[in-house]
Length: 126
Image (cartoon, rainbow, N blue to C red; front, side, top):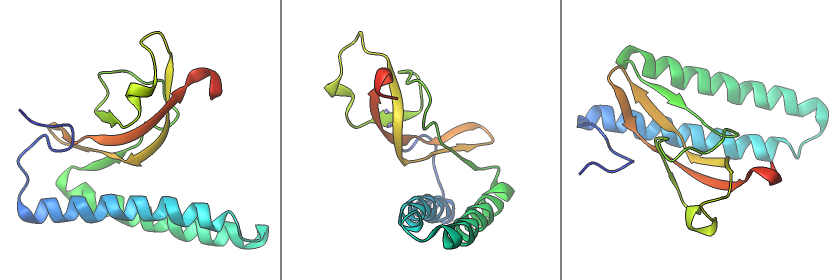
């Protein structure tokens, strides 16, 4: 059975591209949190550089028909292509929201390539 994190057979080259793209996505998220601590006049410059980097990552994925998807802020649905690390912390009656994407979803021309990893929270806390 194929797990949430690997849904299609990937060549070594494609796997490396996807891995680097995911790590770049994660790095930009950390970078943006750090940039928020800077003085206001510096924040825009650094976040624009991070946004440019993510655009270059997306541009590198496009020739392969790949793109990164984030479902952060969306109502959680068990059918989403994600693994929720803290799902067991909630009851079946709770309405949940994707609080944080720890690893993005990667989609390809034939559908899901890799599932994402998330943290959830109750919708009332959103």
